[in-house]
Length: 285
Image (tube, rainbow, N blue to C red; front, side, top):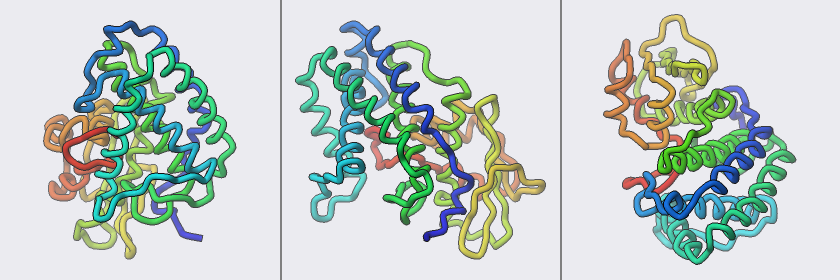
């Protein structure tokens, strides 16, 4: 079996899916025409478009991983992020034919199925790669956490577009940040620091924590504890951290809100972290 211990200890987000889905439906049911039409940080997409994108994610996940059905693949020489941008735009354009009522109905049905799908999953099985964490097969716990963090991010984008409260309490934001930080070993892969070098990322606040990456003979390995003498340390507040990881802000903007000590080059490399499938310009997590 492929060794994925370099990703750090598993995260179990399965109990959170049903609660997030219920909160998402409750949020959408309170919207009128003005809220549905509000622009979001996803270029060209309003609130209804982002909600439709979530529905597309539900349907794609269930079709591929529950039902074993894959109909769409990248074109010849089409990079995977570009492929995702294209099919996401195609789906959202088609979904504009749906009324908001019908969209909520479909999100309710398929969101419930998503929660059941993940609740039954074997967290320790290996599946498809989570590209921002590495090219090899990923454990199911990381795929589930990636899925949850995406739903949370879209939920938050809609809340911010409509001026409503998001799910930023530690119950939700804590696992999301923990998921995003699993990108650190992959982020640092091109650094030339010698074996034994240690980097520490600290996120402040009740949803935060400390993540340590140590350079070994075969690359960087993530741990969930502080390091006594890291070569570099970056401290971010939780709001800056999740926006950086989803490219809601640039690394340069995040650096302006960070406390950095030690090796500035290593710290700068860590601030390039991306915990979504992304290609500029940002389309959607």
